[in-house]
Amino acid sequence: MTDKILALSTCGSGDEAERVARGLVESRTAACVNIVPGVRSIYRWKGVVEDAREWLLIIKTTRARFDDLRVELVRLHSYEVPECIALPVLDGLTSYLDWIAEATTGSAD
Image 1 (tube, helix red, strand yellow):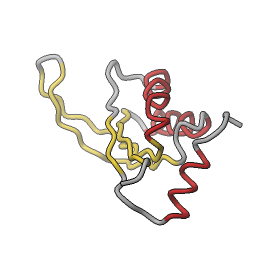
Image 2 (spheres, helix red, strand yellow):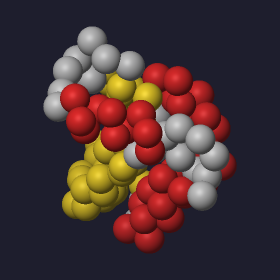
Image 3 (tube, one colour):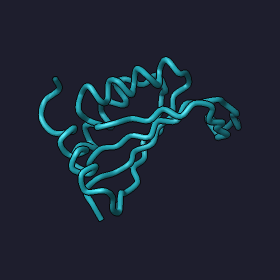
Image 4 (spheres, helix red, strand yellow):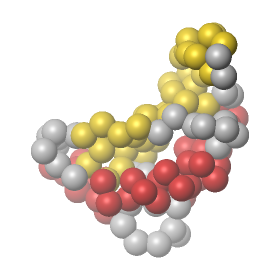
């Protein structure tokens, strides 16, 4: 197991997805964010089953940066309760995992 994680979130528009993704990378809380358009989400919210089109964010970061990523995601996001879950990265190409670490270290440029 590595110290790298994939975090997942969704956004209600492509513009918001791009803004959130860019903010996470610029703040160095994420090394990379993939934006996957056309996700259909069916969920219960405030007692009602909703059906929405969303944009999925696949966020590459480290366990050490996850608390900061959560704070930044809430700050940037329009949802009252944005999705923010983390999945462990068990293994990977060493040079790619090293790049994630380098891209999320230090202060924002």
